[in-house]
Each structure stands twice: as C-alpha cells, then as structure tokens.
Image 1 (spheres, rainbow, N blue to C red):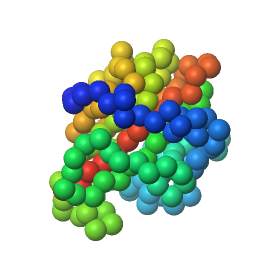
Image 2: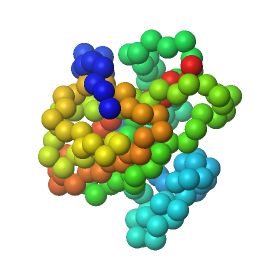
Image 3: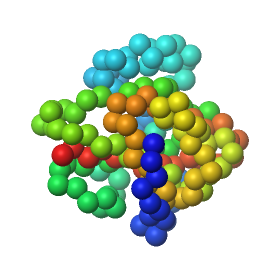
Image 4: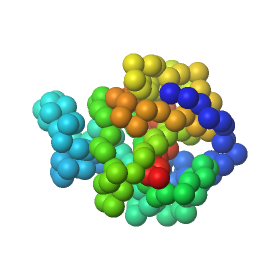
Length: 167
C-alpha cells in the first residue's frame, strides 16, 4: 500500500453532507456475482449473523454529483463511496477481477479516506493496518490484495472513496 499524495482540496464537502442524509445502497446485495465467487463463503458466514446491512455505498447511479477522479487514466474508472455507521463492516475479501468489457486489462485499485483518522475507523489491506491518515490521502494497493474495513467508533460514521482503473 502506497500513499501517492493528498487530495483534500479535491473533496467536495457537499458529498459528505449528502451521504450523511442518505442511505445509499445497502450491502451485501442479493446478487452474489457482485462480489466475485471467491468471496461468497465469507459473505454467507457474515449474513448468518443476522445483520441486514453491513455497509452502504454510493455509485454514479445513486449519487447526484459528477465525480472526476483525481488520478489521470487512459482507461475506464469505476468509483464508489463507502459509508459505514457504528458496527458496519466489509469482511476481508479480494476484489473481483476485471469484468464488463475490462477483462484482460491491468487493474489499479485505490482507497481515499474523506476524513482524518478517527479512533475506531479501521482499514486493513495486505496485512497492514492503515491509520494516522489525513482526509484526502490517496493510497494505491495491490489489485489482488485482501482487504477489509469496519467502524467501531461509537459516534462518527466512516466515509471513504474507492476506485479501480482498468487500463
């Protein structure tokens, strides 16, 4: 995992206000193909715990803002914001390989916190706990790297931007 720069000035405060006041898509969704076959066992285990929504996200079709990723690319970019309330989590997983016309292309994966590190906001990737970050720090990580996150802070939701570039 490598921090490639800070883009705090790029973050639109209206994005966070919108996410604070809206739910977004609840996950896990009913379609297991959304997560890739190698992650299905983990999701099945977590769903047995009885929590309907583990995390929420916002994508181009449910987010009323145009988002231009701060990294230049010659390929397609898929982006999504993640909202985690207290107790929300995304189990450890590896993201699905490129699909929807991007098969065979090189994948680059990125993670950006939208707020400064807060105790209880957890992101672990490739065995490394990421903390002491600042809002807008942009990290690139192994496109096949296992990762997961959760929010055990009792008061403050966790907001991040995630995106993948297929070149």
